[in-house]
Length: 226
Image 1: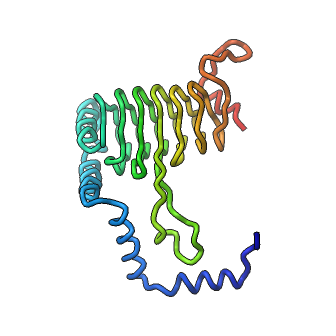
Image 2: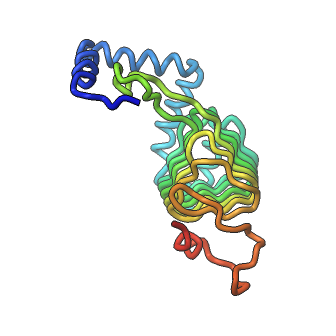
C-alpha cells in the first residue's frame, strides 16, 4: 500500500479547503436530519432538556424521576431502572432494556445505532457503551462531514460492565460476561466469561476456579491482563 506523501497531503488540504464554513455546517446538519426521523429529533431534544434537569437530582427521588423519564424515552424499558447521578444517555429511541438495569455515575450510553440490554445488567461509573462511529474512509472530506456508521450493540442478561471500560459499536457482550475495569471490548465475548485488557481478551469463565481455588475480584482480573 503506498504511503501518503506531500502531494497527497496537498491534494487533501485543497479539497478540504474548497468548501466554505457555512457549506460544511450545512452538510453536517443535512447528514443529521438524513440519519434521524422528525420523531427521533424531538425525542433527542426531550432527552437533552429533561435529562439535564433530572441528571443531578440526588437520592431516591432522583432515581425514581430518571427511571420514569427513560421509561418514556427508551424504545423499551422493563421495570425500574437504577440510573445514578451524572449518567448521560442519548439516542434513547434506539435502546431496549430489560429489568433491573443499573447505570452508574458518569457513564455514557448511546443507542444511536441500536442498543439491546438484557435483564440485571450493571454498567459501572465512567464507562462508555456506543452503537455508532464516525465514517472516516475518505481523505477528501473532513470526518465531521462523512456521517455515521451505525452498528447495533448487544449486552446479554446478568452482565457487569466495570468502571472505566468501553464497549465498542457492533459488539455482542454475551450473557453473564464480566468486563473488567479499564477494558476495551472490541469483539464478541463468550457466555459467563471474564474479559480484561486493551483490547479485552478472555481471562477465564466465572465458575472456573483459579489456581488457588479462590475467585478473583474484577480488579485482580484487570491486573492480570496484558
